[in-house]
Image 1 (spheres, rainbow, N blue to C red):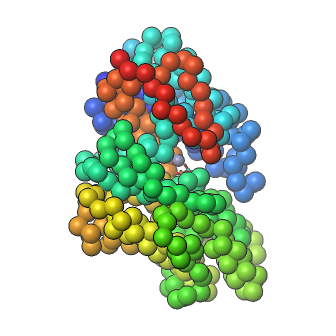
Image 2: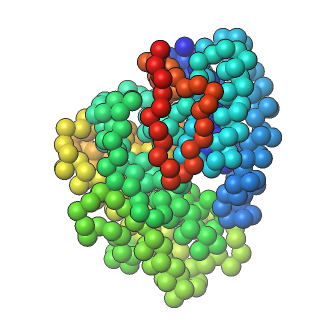
Length: 352
Ligand code: KG4
Ligand code: ZN
């Protein structure tokens, strides 16, 4: 089935065409330049930009794919979690097209789609342990099949991507800071025990990164030379070795070690997994990729990391999971609503 995927949950507007689990074409528009000046996503600006970008992305998608809109057999759209105004723009677009063409529609859980995104590139062995680390979420899941997810743990405060971005902001790095911290870290060496490995002295599988944020802030206050006096741009940013690079390597290692420790505990507590999936924007991080690959190897599991364009928000993953749901008979009606971050996504499909 040729499935249209629509993603607009945060600050990326994206449309994709997926068929038989393979990506045919994708058109994306990042809003980073619009939000960078505010140091974070501004919801009102995000929803207006989605509305503005969608028509040209649609034309571009059809032109790129050499598909005709009549070839499309189903529509999948992110229904949440995300920014409500942003979700509603994508939902209206998807519903409008499905209504006009009388096509089946399905709402996709954005988090589940992140976890399965690598399925576009390789076969995933189930059951999998899934670690989702994005700008808005940090969660551990038992993934029993593409349709069965069991939440094992989540962050009690900041998400991993948020922790990276806030650290970036404190260092006066451009938004989003994660990628710049990672680039600086590559030129430095971590300083042992400089930062606390947060929320490990417990036996649950939750995370907490707010204490780490405070520790980073206190260290920068003591060492103001770490701050960029003038914020570099992504164009003129050149990572160099030195104290700042060592501090970024320490941040990278602290977060990577913390995630690895909880992931190891989940693997040991439950057992029976065949693969370890690491997904979401922060799964682009080099240190996180390295240490979790090593953990998977040690536990003799298939390690699954999507390539970077499939780690960050995209519509290919929505089309991928959407096609699977539609083929298995899952449907939503036009009453499908957006679910904001923090609210539970209902299991409200109907079946054909
Ligand atoms: O999955 P995503 O595109 O958005 C959400 O759904 O939240 O993730 C974006 C996050 C940002 O916080 C960004 O800083 C982080 O992913 N990120 C990274 C790296 N690349 C992107 N964090 C650490 N290291 C990276 N290389
Ligand atoms: Zn996301």
